Length: 486
Image 1: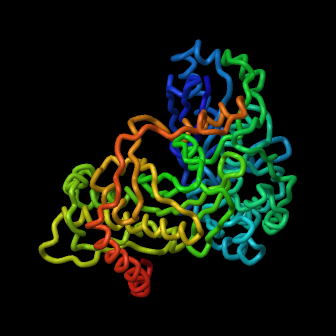
Image 2: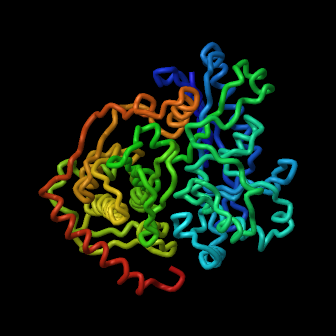
Image 3: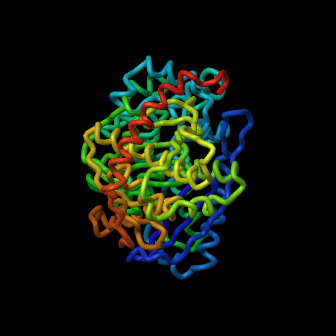
């Protein structure tokens, strides 16, 4: 039996699986986000511990005999958060989360201090951990002076579970302090933020043992003192759950935001296109991600404007789309990451006529998101990362029409897995199994059975290539016309 724990922004998910990775039980516990100022996003680490205890308690009530045969625990979680601890491991302030934007000014300053692009493999963005610490040093110097250790969110859970200060490569790569090629902390990047290795946790691979469950918790829960795996950041753990471990395949997440994830066997950054380059959760593997900030959320926006549920709008677009919508949509409702790196980018509808109807707009939104994913595919390929097929996951992937549009716009073969939960908690459980067995092969990290394959439609691909050219040309022209304060 293996337990996967995934610390998300809105809650904790605990998943218990057996030795064949069949799901035995799932439990959730909710979390809230504090926003004390515009652009801020924080959580109290104590709330994570309480939520984790509730979720595990639910599994203990549902499956006491299975939990008593537990062999290992794996961890996953939201990346980039900054948990600041003093020398006694006391939390000094609420955790600054991944979606907190307060450190925008510090990003430019950090970029000029050290080679973050070359060593960390990523642009310095407000979402990452390093600029958050520079903000704390500037605005809360008394807190910064007391900071003895900086942990990522899931690694604070690890501290509670094991008593150990440990992180793993995939999550550590999202701090901007890791030498991503060497899979080790960078003294140069730490010094640029006023920190040293003494402030950092030890590092292990995600498939390695990071510690053992504390005796007190084991006794309280009635489980053995099992090993706790290094685990993975949320996207790397999801890839472990989907079996996306080798070059050539990936997953495309059509959630609130959009992610195109590709596994690689070498370090190949592309900061010019705002591609994220991180370590994978297993040894000698890396991964790249193209990220768009408003994917399914674009359809949610249209549903709010139209006063109709998003699934109803999606149903207006036929599965057999024959031609592009006459309307063009730029999906930059929350700014954009890949390839623009423009937090101030704005969305737009082009080509509107009196005859334009809601079905035209719904299809245009789907196509605009598809063009964003096409941008991500091209950015990954410019980094030398081949990707030909991707598993389609996320709420928006329930629309066959949307998947067909994305396949035709990107040139990817989209793979629809059979029903099942292959997300970050499941991947964390698999990493737990790997840390016990030492096996990081396809036996542990297998791919799900497929319900369908959606290839690009040759008849649509040419038309979407033309629309993609329009999509790319429109952004810089409209950017210059943006209204003040827009």
